[in-house]
Image 1: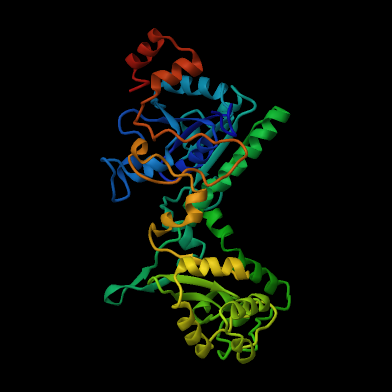
Image 2: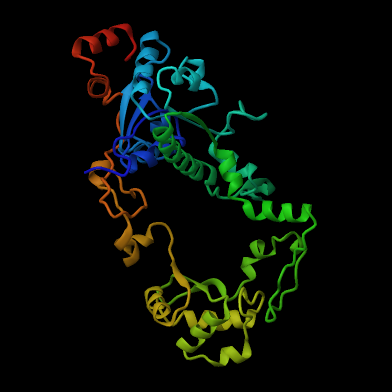
Length: 415
């Protein structure tokens, strides 16, 4: 079975979350060869506070579908072998601090000399340029910088950060994979390689577009209005003029809100347009709500209307989450069950679409790439042990025989 990126070879030198860039490409069928130092290898295998059969789930997820080649880039033979691999590959991923591979003599300029079509994707925390280029980092830093984790009260009166949304570490590799696919298409058409600089902090900031867009609008003197709906009993609060009203006051929303259900769960109700509000009221036999609580045509959350909120709370407790889905499908009302943890695995929509990995093969559960295609996508192989495919890669990709592999081992290039 071939994937969408069948025939694309990727050489990856990465640690921790940047491993996800190669994961996305491997999930789509690319041959991703993970080059890692002999011995310990990528220490993602030991982090995260949880292990499965002694190995971190982060490694099992981010490095699935890859082959591992143990190669010491501190040795001349290791560098020479790496260049030979790059010469017959499409992509090199550097998922390390900026300039790490260049310091080993296998940076973008070095590899262009052996492969003019090489795509060099540098995935780092803060990018290849800028004053923070060499600043050490971990994943929470990117979301904190991007304004995505406001401080919250902590124990003993101290300040803490809330649950990180992990935007930078998750979205950065996605942007990187998109850029790699585009660059490979360009390289194959033009014969020219390119350098890609993807910073996880940039990806996190890009997710905060709402505030950035409004800041730009204010800077050019554009007129910004915060619309409060006719049925809202809550006055505009301080800060409304900067456009954050709709984001920070969702707790006051009524027609766009969580409601408890008969099966002790919650359902997200989203009838903030007049047509959906009318469809809902008629579907539950409560046309009286339309007269008592009329809706604006669009964007009417009925913020602060506690009387309506109390009535809706009673209504939603008359059906289970599954029953509300069925009713909403029939009546054309937007809404979705709210799940905690892994509850969604029992949902029929999840079962119809999710690409569940073989738990026995991967030694844990999990999802494959969330993409549907007209061709069947292969299931990824389990994440490798350090150097698991060293001899296999050298034979199949570079044509090395047993004697040459033995000589490399003797020089320490393979550990």
